[in-house]
Image 1 (tube, rainbow, N blue to C red):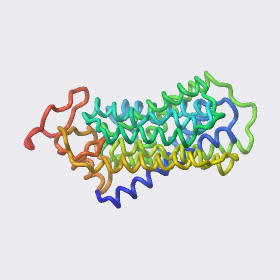
Image 2 (cartoon, rainbow, N blue to C red):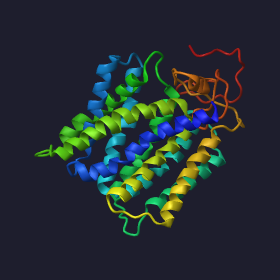
Image 3 (cartoon, rainbow, N blue to C red):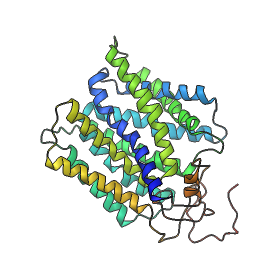
Image 4 (cartoon, one colour):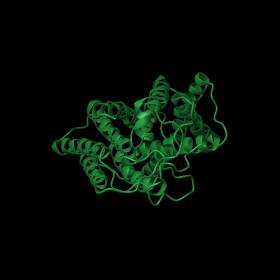
Length: 347
């Protein structure tokens, strides 16, 4: 993949977490108070059902279970913890708590995909966390225990979802819209009974509430997740994970524009640090191999040259060059050494 194409795909993918950064503003200003489950369900389920109606494709075989797992991790549980953090923490602080996500991707990638943890990526994680801290922490910032735990759990869910999405890929012949619809629907159906049992419905909805729910469902879920899963398919998992830092950047900018928050020199320095960490992580995706590679399991990831970028092949977490025939089967240990080109392939 050329550097120009990588930059273009990265910028497009970053639009999704940038939109998610607006969740904090929309939640506090437009949604009914103290309804994280309702907000999560309304955001996910309608968007998923719309995509299912448009594509008319359902999972088959093992993909019923995989779609359910990915739907809960990427959508259902993640949405709930995100909204819970948004209700209990200032938007920037909630985003800061979730900056542990790339480090979790590194650790899970080592376990599930056999990827090597590189010093460059650890440095990028540290730089990003420091940058977000400078960007969002204010003297009056309140740290609520429930909000912090919710943010951490949300980061774990999203990181696990990213790595499993890289490991399993997408079923052959299934479009990106259908794949996104499966996960949004599974996540919404997971949340629906929990919402009905755990929260009372608001007595009335204002037009502002309706607009907020509509924005989060159509823009924040349907469109944003199509863009996000497209990016995950074409970028190394860690590189995609770093793009999530567009969320606190967007949350801070929106706070400055609409909520009277100020941006001082330290915040501008923090923003520069976040951008630098993202660039550093992206540069690490193109380094030559230095260890025995592994390969993510699953179907096609992309629809053009980026498909060959992964399968032809780069480590699904770090982006290191690997051989396309080196596959780690589910539940088995990563290959200890190179696999001969004539070895059995995946059928």
